[in-house]
Image 1 (spheres, rainbow, N blue to C red):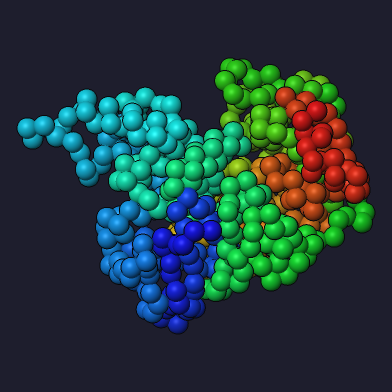
Image 2 (spheres, rainbow, N blue to C red):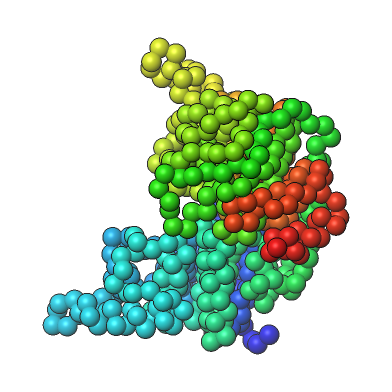
Length: 506
């Protein structure tokens, strides 16, 4: 590794009684992709703030190009060639790509905006970032993966030598993430230094040159990118990987869901929406069944169609809920059948971010807190207080805005909301996306507790270690069809075949 271009030594930061950073050392070399891992509260955000000029440390030194620097604002860091790409992208949806790239630094001619010149230069910046988009397109028309690439192009427009990327793949599909990795590798090859923050351990080996792990405001280890996931988890949470997952089911109950050659015909076909074509699977009380499959396999579509969410249509084949044939065509019918659904987009469709925790928790079960047609604040307070305690939502403040909670706590609010009605079957789509390892362990433990109480769970996840560690059986999907089932309790050979992608690629 070459001599660092950015070096932080002994960085210390307190916020009142909270010691956010405790003498942190961190370095970055030209062309390096340095992955930074850590649970929520580990100190990653504060350290990123120091690098990007948003946070002034109480103690410690920052060297850039082997010279001491002191950033008092993001403008200082930006002028020095350091750009931050936050998880919530700072793009204006109502403007086109070119206008976003030059926002605050518009090109004018005679005091008038030069739209043609901005689009020409914007197109060159997009090409440099590996983006084949028309610079005249409005940002509102772009997919999330495309917006992430536009944000990279915007950072490069300021001649950034150092990019700080915060959870860039949190809301991306597998294909979009793959393209982003290609862009990151290309930038690295051209000498751009990248600090890459992620919760997804499987990304580390694909793009990192070094990996640093933080916990409780400290750097607890720096490793090579090929370090075993078990070692990374131990550094992240201070306990072995196997401890993340509770024991599998020891006994199961009656059938809750049975699909036999079931298919779903949408009223209006949608491009890119893989309808279930031929699905056969079952979920029993006390059982957690996983759905595995590559991007486009139809896992999300299966769950959303079962809950009547998103697409109108009609089921064919055999569909039984608790032994009775049913036609599930709406959210109302699904809830009546005892089916709850946690979507893969908690910020977009799972929660109302501008509302309080209390408002979100009771949203799906208003009848319980409106005995006479009006909301009973006493009933609401009791219901919400119990939910916050049961799901360990922090802080325990019903009046807190959901938007201000961490990703893990937002996900707990979604679980509390969906389970308030006491469903018998829970459908989960990417339940731990964007959630740190510690919060994942809590979610896994809670799911197993619910299963032991008789709940059935059908969970889709793109994280194979999650499916392997959590599920009693794993059903593999491809192109809207179920193609293989592993279990009960997948054995070592099953785990190997799934892990190596042998079945997924079949």
